[in-house]
Structure formats: structure tokens, C-alpha cells
Length: 376
Image (cartoon, rainbow, N blue to C red; front, side, top):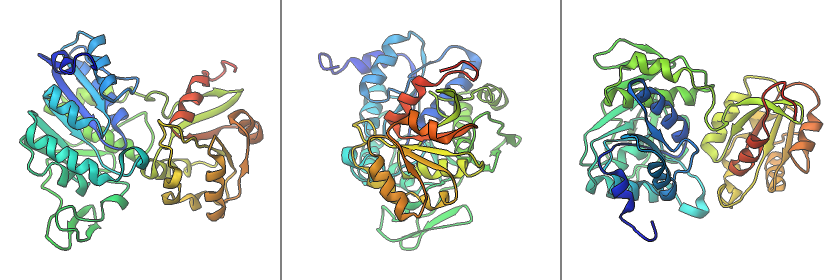
């Protein structure tokens, strides 16, 4: 791409391109959507998660398939949209992530808004429950399908991008107390594990993936699949076979210990993961790094309600374990700090545990994960 800046456009030419972006859930939603679309033939995808410009170009270079589903980093989305002229763009949510690299979410809102006003896009499928997305697609050239998929993290969307007044969330609805901006009319609505689509029978979302946020991801993928001409029932059958996404939610063995791997990379994802681990009584190993891929600023820890972990057995490790330990001390969560993941698992003892890790720590743990019964 350095030698030929127009190469991405040439690679995309003649293909049906679908882009999926958002702060959280894009890997899972893109995987579910690709599986759904495969009901009618092969689909290319960047399944390994390389979602910047280089990763998008690599995915297109590797596969000759004419149908493509790509997850795209929030910061890279405007440039990718401009160069690929996608048939469909799926927008999930916006929240703070890697502030040292990209700054506040207002930067994404402006970038997405500018790109969608100018680029050639066939259709947008947008989560109507995020006011930031309503601002980001304002003035977009493409028609919008609004989905009430749910928004588990509202803290970054409480200020209206149009008039700077407060957004009120109540009963699944939202509106601005200043200018009257409110949630758009819906073409699809998720109620717990049921998706209601206009003109269709209610669909029960039956997944092998845990957590309410994955029901939201699945709802977005189902609506997008329908827009691509996929039968929703057939799409759901394919989606229900997905049990992990690049190791997320995978269960296996590390050093002989039974573990479940969970990714927590920002306040929104960490809050969702806490809801999941609180359903069990397993020990919890928290692993925090702050490398370039994680974001080097760990201040997001102070927005996570770690107080919910009081009374649980908690082990802490990772290169920024001291930052995490300080946060847990203020949360009054008893915990033990260890040197690495192996020592943390040794301190857990027998029985299953959850390993909740930031991006680079998660990747290392995933490489070490063995099938249950497979040894270390």
C-alpha cells in the first residue's frame, strides 16, 4: 500500500464488500455475519482480527472470493469505506478505547460522519440504541436500517453531539433533553434473546457464545444477513455453531488448569465480562498489559466497577499488574499479585477459573491454551 496507495480500491473492485466496525463486538459480529452469508457460498474474511488498512488489504489479497466480510478498526473505517465502496456497513457502538492512540470518541464521530457523507455505500445497518452512532450517520448518503440491539455501556454517550445537552436513557429508549433528538424508528428490535424484524416471524437467538452482548452482536449480524438476502432462519442455524472467536470465550487447559479465556480491553468490554464471570463462583485471574496493541494508558481501569468482585478469589498479573492492584485496593477487592500467568494459575489451585486479559496478554494465553485433557 505504500508503493501503490490505490491498491485497496483495485482489490475491492467487483466484489461485494461488507464492513463491520465499532469499539466492541466487531470481531464476533463479523464472524457471525460471515457464517450466516456462507449459507449460500464461500465468503472471505479477516478472521484473524487484523483490522487496520494492512489487514484489510491482506484479507483481500489472500482470497479470490467475490463476497467479503471485514471487521475494521474504528480509526481506519473512514479510509476503508472510501477505498472499497462497500455494499453494506454495520455499525455497532462507540466507546472510549486506547485514548493514547485515538483520543476521545468525538474523533470517531466526526471521522465517520465525514466519510459516510461522501463515500459510496449501499446501505448502513446501525445500532439505534447508541446516540453516538445516530450522530455519526447524520447526513449519510446511504439508507439506514436501525436496529434496537441494546447498549450495555452508556457512559460515553450521555452528551448530545448535536446540542451538547444531556441524553436521557430510560426503558430502552433515549432522547436529548435539549434539542429533542431521540432514538430513530426501528426496523429490528432485540428483546432479550428474541429478535423482532418487520414482516418476519420472531426469531429466537440461540447461541453457543455467552453473554448478553453477544445476543446484541447476533441481532446486528442477523439484520445485516437479511439485508444481503440470507434467510434469517438459515443464518441463525449457521451462527449457532460458533463457539469462540479467535479464542474469545474458549475453554481449555493451561499448565493443567481448566480455564475460560475472556478479553477485556476497555471499560465497556470489561463491564460486560464482569457481568459474565459473576454468574459463576470460579476464581478470576486478571492479566493487564499496556503495550501498543493494548493502549499504553491504563487509566480506563478507573471506569470499571471492580467493586463487583468483592468476596471472590482474584489473582492479578501482567506487565501493568501494579496499576491493576492499586485500582483493586481502592475497590476494596482482596487479591493476590503474581509474577506471571503460570504462577497465578498455580495459586488458584484445582478447579476451573476465568482468565480475563487485555489484548496482548490474551493473545499469549490463547497460544498456550490446550484442548481439555490435552496436557500443557
